[in-house]
Length: 100
Length: 490
Image (cartoon, rainbow over all chains, first blue to last red; front, top):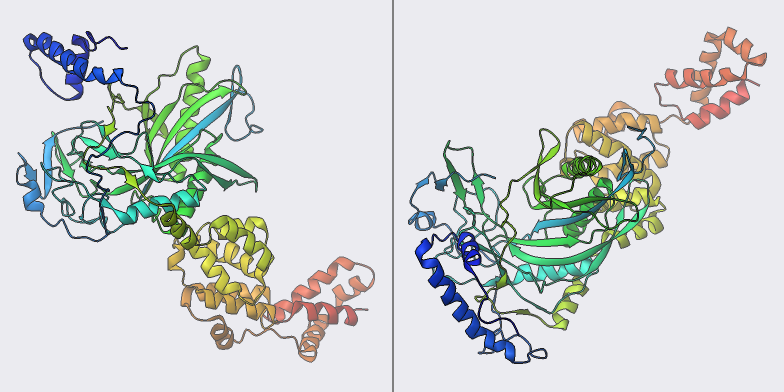
């Protein structure tokens, strides 16, 4: 059984926030850590059930993955695609410089 | 440094002994579909910026991905061609990371349950040896968009046309031991993909690119720490990058250092790799099953249908060429490298001397195309015309020497060889009486040499043959010239 009380700590919250590009005020971090631990602790109750012989459930509806045929029926909507971009130029999105 | 000339490819002579390379490749092959993996936008190359983008690709809220059946079929087809296990149930996962050309904030890929599992291929090495390389897996995933960094001093320009285009990632096992083997492996994969039509294999346009995982070790030791060199788009660069990266690692290890597991870029101008300075979290992708997509399932009979429709693959075709046309296994392996080569060869050699045709195609035609900087599809010489040339040589109408002249004329004029032979009067002269006239002329012009020959200077025989051939402007049948000269100079 995993420790339900302390699954995440503040450094973990910091890491997740960085990965998600979220700016979390210092004052909120303690609360957020508690919230996350509560949520994860709640979900961790599932660990009490033996699921070793149970297939993962992907859908409760029994639907199958729909497939489409390979033809072009979309695109040619640059204006629409760029409409919400804060900046664009000659058909490109323009963003602050990102370079490896 | 010791003498490295006797080192095997993939070995590096260090101060402390010989190091061996361990290499694994991840090949990204763009599927030759008309539309994208999860949207109906065009997957074509070279369109206006953001023209081939749907609201799904742009990751607008509420848009749902719907998978392209053709792409699934190509992945299964490729899996079968790689002698690999096909997984009738596979799952799509989200690989989360932020980058300006990835509007979703995640790439849809397959992590724990790929569509294709383990397989293997046989690669042909330059020394004629063959080697089996294991395939770890093949999975389907989306390509990212394109960022242009050189349009503006402080901004990047983003084109999402490539966003969501279907890729197959083919992961090898770490079975590769030299840059040359890596090159041969990529060649073989590319050849198979082209045969089955799953990917056009065009490395210049980026339809096929490779990430190389490289580590070094002393023979028999455990694998060392590896570095990944990203996004190599030519076989030459793959070979260069692996060699230079392995040498870099040996230098570090021999100075007592350790290798940091990291992602590196190959700088084509320096021929060296450099660190991408990625953040520590770069590889924390937080994969989880994509809730927008149900597991991909298909029946065994659907897989069987695809299997039955597979075209003949390079390995089996190679065996058949050796058997049917009597050519060497080495020549056959060159001819099966490209589907176009084999088709051309089979047309040209049909009903003719297979060995002679292979020689002319590999040595003369490939050589001439390379010299003129032409691709194979641009060849001025058709398979019919090369075949006709082979017939003219085989039936004695022209000599091998004249054939070369006709051939270079064919390269320039695109005319058929019989047309050229007729126009220029190049038919081989085999008629005894005509050749005897030439021989008499040569003998009377070179009386002194004839005397020397008759007094025992045998070596001069070649000189007389040469003179007769020259007098005939190369048209005399050398066999007949030899025979008649011998009789005449008794």
